[in-house]
Length: 66
Image (cartoon, rainbow, N blue to C red; front, top):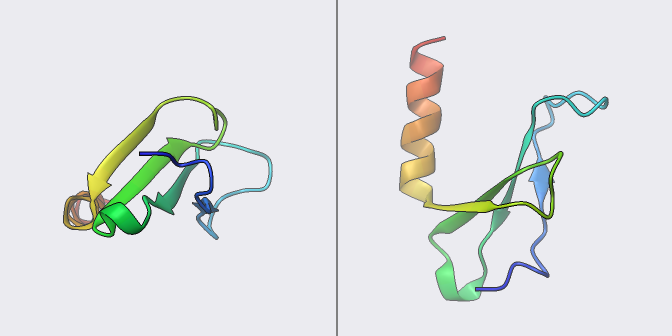
């Protein structure tokens, strides 16, 4: 799966100074239920592929322990 043409998005809550941010992108037409996640400070580094349901579960879990 190629992510060369992926449109990466950073949270609107991210600071403009870099910080600890992740970026998300859809994985493409062949994997509509998959989200690509990467470290914004290392855009050429590894990418984690997760289903939309798994990402939602992770976000909900993080919000519940805040």
